[in-house]
Length: 429
Image (cartoon, rainbow, N blue to C red; front, side, top):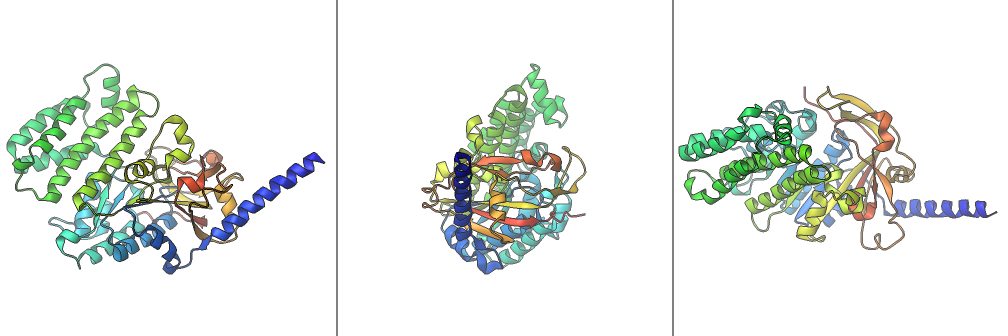
């Protein structure tokens, strides 16, 4: 009898949760169905758009739709993505039609060569970039919308960009920075080789990279021929070199969260630099994995001391100034690799595990939907921990049951998009 009552009680809880989600669900059917979301996000300083994987068509498609409306209707100024700064700056040049820009977005993206290329070299990004180019062509130069990578990788390319720009503009600065960067010479463009050498007792280059950043900041007046945008490009590439040195070194010589948080602080710092570049009242859009944009304080990341940009932006700007939007799926296909550096392939995503938000949302019966969470949601009995799908660029469908992050969903996100079945991103070839 007691066992039967327990089963009935559990069933009633699950049923009430499912009913609550069904009542909150907004069917996703055309761009006008985004009206409530756009209204909720319109006045924020930063809108962070996530993804449960780096290789899913629907996430890119709907983030594109949201971004276009925020830009066209509510004057958002830039998009920052989980990608490399130097290489994706070429896309920024294209969408703004700056001197030396490529002839098309596809031309820029086909030149990306750091794995996993499909994250940005895909038809979905081409569509957004071409729209941005057309939109920007109607705007004065100082009002054009920017597109930037905010990650810490591709540091050797950033190092080359710093030296090339200085060589062409300021010989004394070029000599000073070249001397500082000589610290990296024995490691021949291999950051892991550098990090392991430091771990074995060789000299670290942290002081040298900081010297470069400090020098460029203190001597801004020595580069009068550089425009505001070009100086930003110079300094940000130097920041990539500096923070990448820390990231790789910490990955090898320390344990725990140091390396992860180093990368996180770099991305968050880049957002701050972009807001300064675009002005005090600027507004930005971020594209990154759910692991980065969903507030880490409401996942198991809090137990390991790992932070992310969702957490840091809420802390720095206030929860009322940022809007965190997660994206997820019940099942489908995804573009990923079986190991780091391996060939990309289309993989099957199995149905979500029972104790997950995806499994619960699937019971609503809508192919695609979103939910906006509010203060009432955070007061009710909907704060139970549930799994939330997280697929990386390296993926093994056989281990999918381990790809769910323990999450208090209404606290981690301000809104969540759900797709019953998703498809792989359309990589450029």
